Amino acid sequence: MRKAGDDEEIETGAVAIENVGGRSTAVRCFSKYPLKFILPRKVGSSKTDAVWIYTLTYGGGIVSGDRISCKLSVGSSCTAVLTTQASTKVYKSVGSKCSGQILEARVGSNAFLAIFPDPVTCFSTARYFQKQVFRVSSDSSLAIVDWVTSGRHESGEKWDFNLYRSTNNIFLEDDQPLLLDTILLDKEKVGCVEGYMQDYQVIAMIVLLGPKVQHVQNLVQDDVKRIMSEQLLHPSTTSSHQTKRNSDYLMSKPSFVASCSFFGPERNGLIVRVAAVTTESVYKFLQHQLAPLEPMLGMPPYG
Image 1 (tube, rainbow, N blue to C red):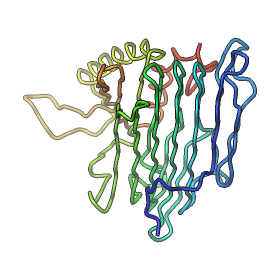
Image 2 (cartoon, rainbow, N blue to C red; image 1 turned 90 degrees about the vertical axis):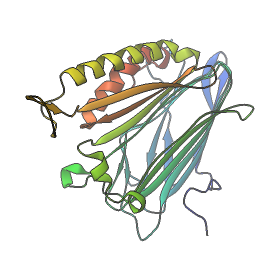
Image 3 (cartoon, one colour; image 1 turned 180 degrees about the vertical axis):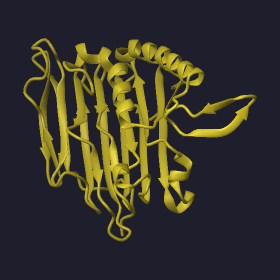
Image 4 (tube, rainbow, N blue to C red; image 1 turned 45 degrees about the horizontal axis):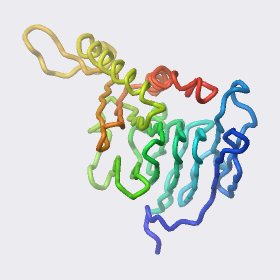
């Protein structure tokens, strides 16, 4: 019996981007149930050289037991964006069935791949894993957003799923690991996930790697420092208050928390981690931080 998270999956989709006549062009696009790709012919101005790939699932979400396995290759000097049309909904699990998605991507020399999905939203009792493996050249560029919400909190479901595991691994062509990262929220192991998350309803990770996003790295670092300085000096009065008292003032918990750290032997990769009380605040953060990529991509990410 195949275990949740096994890498040997039946391929349900593949896209190959190559340089044809000096432009990034999809030379292969294949998908089958429950996955579908949409590739618009034109995004942004005619000067934009980027292929946008929208993914969607039949039925509007991932059903218990669904397995999606995709391969994506971005050839030398090409640009591609993989995104979604809405949040990825993971429906309730049937018994112990686990749903999952696996993406294997290769990014060529001087190429740029952006992964900009809407958040994953797991329903109560859902069991879900996703794994993304990127193989890059020394001068490839990557921008990855990976995020998850607490669920249908407007219906009273807050971190009420049974399992969420998200893995992002980046390797150089010689299999040297640049980043090995996994987020695991397992109700069986930690009990009440909501208790650990407290009021935070969203967690997100942004990865920026390579020469084409270096200017964005610098801007993000400066913005995160500014945001956290403001949050710590003037934390939100709308978030729940901690009971710590120091002298005569009450310290409240920030409604938005972010941090930055470098990775890679040359420290040319930046990872940003975010926890927030609202999904809207993360959307605004992503819009602002990734806006400088619009000239390369043809459209503002999360615009």
